[in-house]
Length: 242
Length: 256
Image (tube, rainbow over all chains, first blue to last red; front, side, top):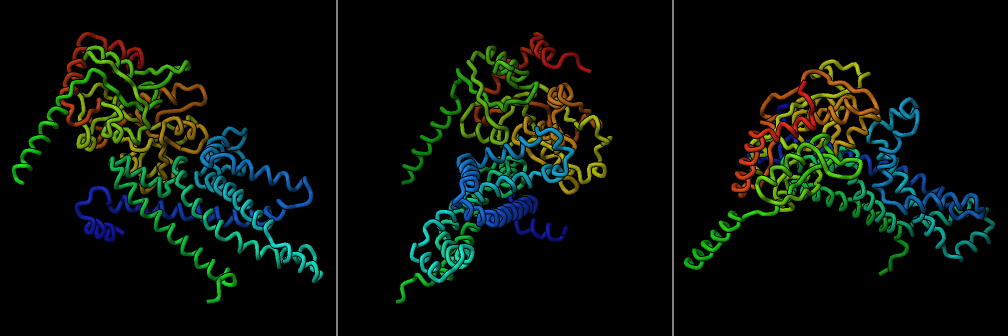
């Protein structure tokens, strides 16, 4: 380990800001940001699918709470949600003794909870919109085949809705990556946290933030590329033949 | 071409000198609030504290009007360089690293740093071994941050906060095992607080100088030497005639 760090310092010789230590912070930040965004997106997606289906339920007592949930989480800034979950939760009586405390004590889990609930709300609405936009003809054809409601949902509506939602969902993923920049306000050492640390220690705003902006750009590019690949694959039937 | 260059260089030089010789009659001072008892707001919302009182006194003696501008700590030096204000008087410790960027007045106060933990904590010393695996709280970009990062960065978790408030909140929430703060600030916000009981762990710390510097100074832009000189003279004056001691007494009481 020491060898690597001296080797690194040799390469970076003369650079006061980008030493092995600060690059280590950036690396740590990259890992935290990726973990946080990836986990919240996966859990959010898993939550959003049933919620989106139920959001279009015939029964008001199912529909309304989900509508309220998406309305509240889309209607308030993510930063406020994060503050409430991280700083607010400690004022709940007895929380320090509860079994949840080992999780809530770390900054990571409150941030994960806030991000997950937020992205789940947006994704629910994206999917709900896509489900609602299913062509009437497809549904009528499924009915004519005698499919039950469940089978129709599984085989006809959801697959076509996912395809339709794909571009909008890709945007949501990128928004989530950018929104994760606020994680550093609750002491998480994410990419932005690392940049703020370097900035505050060396008073070098340009170096610290331009470098981190470049990393975000690379991540965004990777996400864009992935979704373009997915769209090409899944929406192949919509492409013109020639 | 060469002539043109010389002339424009000359012009630049003249412009630079006039900028240097700029005479202030209104000085804007950047400050990070709250940092009790150095700078904080009364329940009525009025800005007060040791820095504020001393600063206002100095301004009066220098013969300028002063305006306090609030700025979060981690952007306070860039804010000075960006001319958002003309000086920083915000418990800023003089050290070599900062000297490369800003010009300091003479030190006007020398506080030690200290470790604070809940009274129930079993921590009795702050060696590397005893803090292994613990969570340490510091304010981002402070000299305490630099010290803790370099000394304990590879054994303990370090949580960095933008304001001292957030840190105290997390200390009360039991998210932090121990925090490292300027001693007077820790005493005012933790020891003297009514919420919970806290204790000082180990000795007050002022060494090594490389981290803890030479006490608090007022920071100016490098070129404002004249202004810094005027403040130094005023500082001498208040220290001579006892005004300094009055202000010190008001915020720190008797020295222990």
